[in-house]
Image 1 (cartoon, rainbow, N blue to C red):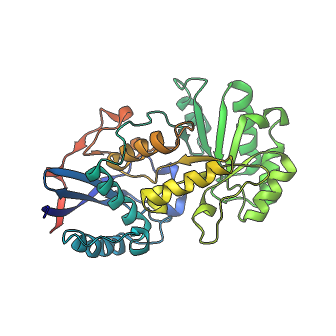
Image 2 (tube, protein in one colour):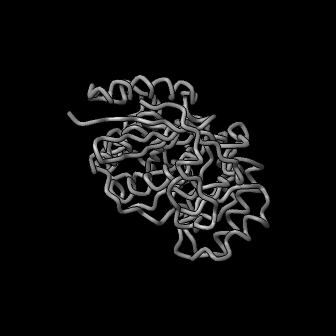
Image 3 (cartoon, protein in one colour):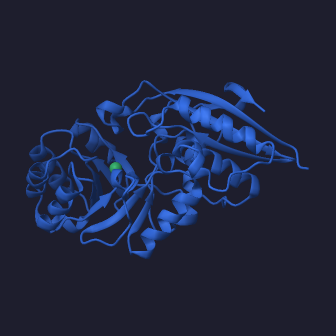
Length: 330
Ligand SMILES: [Mg+2]
């Protein structure tokens, strides 16, 4: 009978770029668990890091569920549907570790990502554009200030640079505010807005906004609501899949397949995971959404890398397994 063991580590890394997150979700440091599974000579890692303000489960709940699941796993008692037993962050992390053990998660990483820009300092935002190539995909957070000012900023940006934008309002605007925002942008530029993620507070308002303006939208928060069904809709261009908030690789894969079946783009996105989780998301993106640029530009939000390097933050200090707190071993 194969020998199995499981170890859980805890990491805590200071956040150095929290303007990506809405105010209510900002925390001074990012905390999560790393799971290491061993079976005979093989080893697999995964990250369990519920994101405060977005995940439904707190870290201690994910940890307790992981203890129970892994306690059964080392005895070779494995649940078929891990999403039924584990909250999403734990299902994602443990499914990654299991996939590394059995070699089912391809190694190739998608090294492209949409550049993520956020913050109210326009000069600082503009300065971040220096060095970003024209053909890059850029994502900008909106809905955090005066909609007219934000609309003028996006208009100016599109008139100065030949770029395509993804915008994300995190449901912050009323339909009226979203339409004020859109009316500050010349309609000739609308085709260069790939989509706005969840512009309005409700799906109905977002649909009406898209219908009135002709600007495409994407579902993100809605995808994780229990009654959400992937389907083709007028003006909906994409769904955003955040595996830490969604669940196992199998569940994410099913959502990608459903999206592609309805001619929607599926965009794998990060939830401020450490570089360990990010490299796995980049592998999932290369495997499941090879034709779409994922949203993984969050590595520089954390002051340290964890276990595995991320291509654009190679100068950032790295925590190795020896630097982590081992909290449980079975
Ligand atoms: Mg979003």
